[in-house]
Image (cartoon, rainbow, N blue to C red; front, side, top):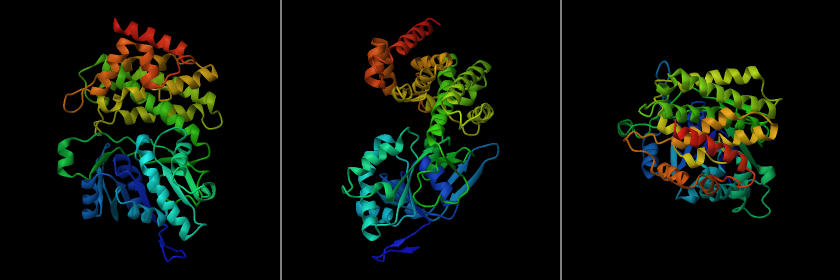
Length: 407
């Protein structure tokens, strides 16, 4: 521990994690907690907070060829409605992670800022690194802007705050009500446990724990996650549901050779786009191996990942900068073909899979009804498309969707 001027104890091996959800617990908490860190979660769920404080640990069930259980020890939790306690935890942390989703980032920003101010007042030369486990492009820029709204004008962000972007590749499925009733703290996850992060943005030494994979050009790896992993995942769900609307699990649709082969083709096309954009970061062999590994992981029967979970939230996943259109924009800039990706995206406009309760997503159905009424305007209003720049792509996409309607 480091003793600061006001006798405040800073624990180098304490991580504060905003968000005790599936990624927070099964990935970030597991990585650090099983490597000797004390884990402090900040969350809004009073039940999860109380349970974590009562148990002091939680289980992660690894779903693979052989099921195993990891216990994450030395855990406690703080309610986000207690800003003083959160500020104290942040001020004394060795490192902080954020895994709350983009929409919640503005809500946690003042809590983080409160901790940074308290830390600065105790020791103006002691930086803090924030791992942004958010799977979003330009996450550091977004989070910095939100935090700065709550910091003094003279606060030296560049010197004292490391904003560490990541590429979150771990798949964590939804759990049944029965699973959660048996143990509200347990989380299921695949065996994959590598956290790719920006190695150049740390203000303190990178923690020496197994599973961290620092990269020099994080933008390339964020795009690899979005445009190969996320795009391929959604392609299997959308095309698989189009051909097999009664199938529940992702491995079921991928057992169909047509779905498997088309998903691979779309992923390979995206890999070619990434090779053009980031020739110094990837090789054809690297990306081909990555695609093979992903397809193997997508077919993990023990994980029981559902077609619904992978495909739902259409306005976001079909959005202007997400897995499909983001790759297409990159392809247009480098004059690369994107026909397979566009076709894969078109199947998304027929996605009406049901959840575990046999109900479709009401918001997705509403979106699909708006698409039927006015295709172009819905993409502009709900998905952020540019009516001028994206017009040629929207026209091609609309034509493809219309052809599929009579399939």
